[in-house]
Length: 271
Length: 355
Image (cartoon, rainbow over all chains, first blue to last red; front, side, top):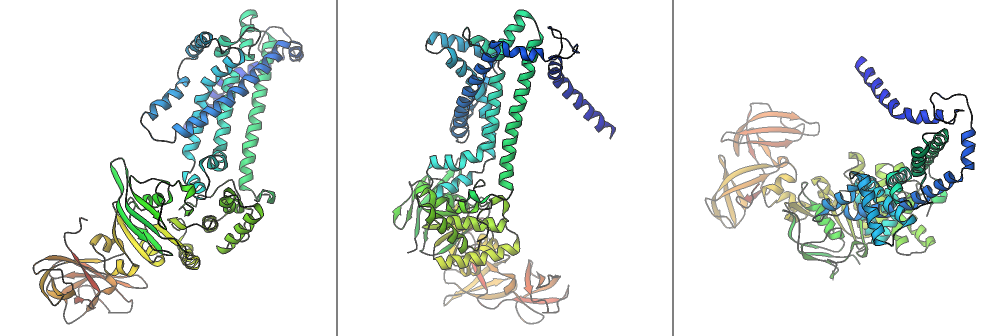
């Protein structure tokens, strides 16, 4: 009993240690001082209202969002294809190919960034938004592949076989059966990809064109130039809240989906 | 009206393993055929080959004379029911059943009424808007069956469709399935490892082992006159008695087993040949005096509806007899003579079986 309590206490401490910096940022963002202190001195929401006057942050947020949405879409397309075509078929060199597509997870991001920068600038055709989206897709796709592959492994192939035997051509089986069955996996894959892209600093720093920069890269630059100020904390706090809100929304969506299938179904869904 | 199916020298391997080995099979129109065997015998692979989920390495599959070997599953028009039912979890009962009609482009109103009719045919009329997860196993089974039948398939392929149900429901569904199949007259191929189910349901049984059909015949044929000890033992309990052909005359082989000789109608044996005889325990007759194989009762087990009497022959060998519960009484250690009425046991020549 005591051993168990100790163990749980230890786990709790580790959790606290990991989440504490986020709490610090949230709490410190209301300090009246222009520089970051903890515990905060006084209480003000001045820094939050300041953000709206700093157009740079708004632009950067919009840019980050745009990049993350596009990179997520591209990664999901690629990831689904890889998971279904390579993950589900047996052929020589399959595992090698799979490792290749998963390799960006273990490769240093810096190497990926430098390599892509070199490649893009030499080709001359890929720059600006396209370059950032493609680069983000390179690091987001493996996460999409992982989650979707896990979902396809759980999915029952005989359900798809049944659809085929009922006369559904392969594309129809994919649309009507496979993708709906994979929906939870696709959704979590998309969340992963979005978060990885939205959070990324290294690649964005390397590939951002002047004047068009993602929010994390902008924050990094500002912190490097002027040191940590409370505005940065306020922006970070908003980011944390934004991400949490997004998760809640998705959780709600998935939760509702499950509810939909287990509860008594509304009759309007009948064929 | 009903479809016939022909398999010609069909083989399919997985790596080193030959799952289906050079099989020839003719399924008659309207026939209910069971593919019976232990797991790994190739019965499910055979069904998947017929359905088109797998393609054979060699051989041809013909449906009413049409070569369907290269046809993808969605062009074969075969109804398939899997062991786990494989219902679409994100569709309602009615959507599940109507799916095959929807992809075929049947107008919605007609599709709905045909789906309802198919559900009525399997005795499920009040669950239209439910999702599969909300149904019992038996109800899911019916939905799967209705979904397969609604497209008016050329063949019905069933892969252990009843094995996930509990015993009493399974027996009920066996009868229903058989009646439905008879009423529709649809050619049906049924994969099972349950010998009783195969015997109950089918017109013919193909007993399979290691990718081959060991014996193909009516339930009575495979049960009463198995071709080898594998078929004999797989289809229920049996006693295998070793004997020697003592004499052959006028198409009757006289076989010596232990201390007694028994006549068998078999012409193709020669004197001196070692043979094996399969004798079902329910066909054994025990007598406290007289002729037959002499021995003693080594134990008597009461099972309610019958007695299992274990018999030990003087010349060696222990066999069992199923007796009515009020027969006897039999006592442990009592000397008895074992025999059977003519025709109740069958010869399996030794050497044609490697089990």
